[in-house]
Length: 286
Image 1 (cartoon, rainbow, N blue to C red):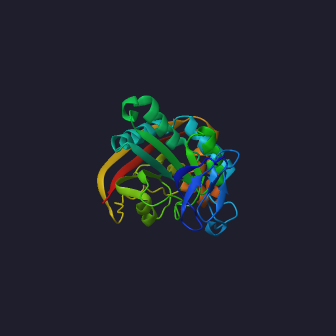
Image 2: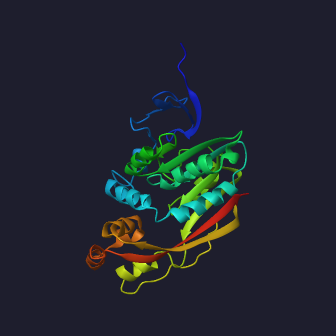
Image 3: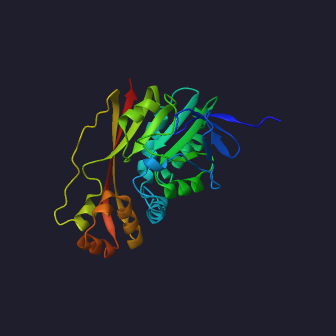
């Protein structure tokens, strides 16, 4: 009796050969094997790719991020992001990668929008969704959101995906290597990059910093890509719970630079009104 296996676009992080999926593991032609965790994800992050024992955001940070996003504060942004991505879908077999997927909120929202809100676009088409994050805690929570999405522990600086395999990459605030993004993207594929607008979370900065500064407006260029669209998403949120404020802070880069004074201000903040300001840039691989 033959062993059932399926082709995949995942790449062996040791020898860079294509991985084939079996019932409980992925294996390459050189017999490097990677077990599918009982929770449903696959770990393709090698020990030499880690700077710490447990890289990326912690379990506590992921719990805070999950709880904050589940409250819908970023839903309007998510809906606009979905519209942008859906308008750029091409082909019958579409592979979508969220490079730095966190606990999976945005990728799961996208999948739901494609399958439930846009039934016409899935007619005679096949979609596969991939989420990569360096944090095992993040991926563990992501799988809980949707077990059908291919969630992978891996690095954006050595993306465990075969070359020219992805139609759309989402890079939502996550650090990455542009040559890796270019490598895994198909010709004419789209790179969706989310960056903070000038006013993003300025209300929070006013609380935390003595001299708050607005974000600098920078034009980001990627070698081998051309910018084809840019959309700004701007609206206000009112956070009425101190726990939600703390969860928001834990999602931001400010969390890593806290001094005692900032920590005290954060602990005493129970309400927050601030502007959300995102730039969504669409690049095409040329």
